[in-house]
Image (cartoon, rainbow, N blue to C red; front, side, top):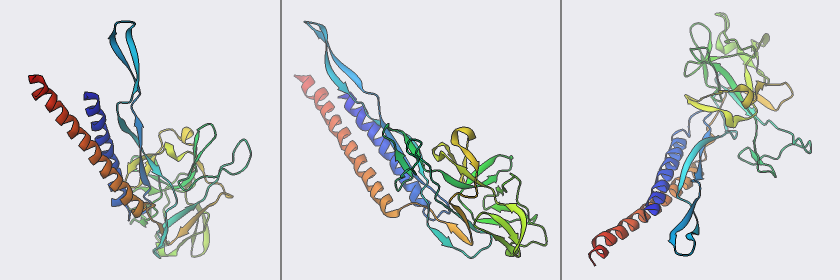
Length: 293
């Protein structure tokens, strides 16, 4: 009976965290470049239950018992968000449709709508994703899909959170005093132009081959602890990534699906709550009524 209490309690904690993840997605539905988070739940390891004190063998196996579930991690959902036109020269959006080839067949991998593909062996492969390269105040490189930038008084192109926007060489993009933001144009490959003339600077766009290795740091940026494991590399010319000036990529959160997930988490939480109440009443009868006989 106590195991049932623990199982129901773990279910309530799991659904609470799932609920928190969904509400976070809903709260960021208007955040540029925000990527939806999905909770991944996993069951506790199964336990072998045995009957102790059997007169014939000493112990007798009854079977296996699972003692609950827990939220293992929250994974971002890197599907392309809708583009919203702003008309500002300092706003940029990435359109990413990167592909991978199946090493066995040489054909493009058929990713599903969530950008995921499961092989016959059960291996999960994620679609690569492109990001703007930015740098924080400590000189650490970060990655973001939020392209709402601005130019500070020193002429540096920065994100709204103050990160420096980097070029393809890893240097901060700095516009001169005679190069106002209104004169800046960027082509589909990220090459900068001033009044229609190229200035030999390309916006730093990184491709993360395994985006599931990214860690959300907050403020719309991601960090990579191991660039080799994440497969971080520079964008190549022939890849299907475009830069759109005057646009912002919106959040990829689906409000309809989020509301369904919110209600499902609430119903599951209530079901586990009722099970705890049931076990509580059963324990009350066992202690206060049956114990008197």
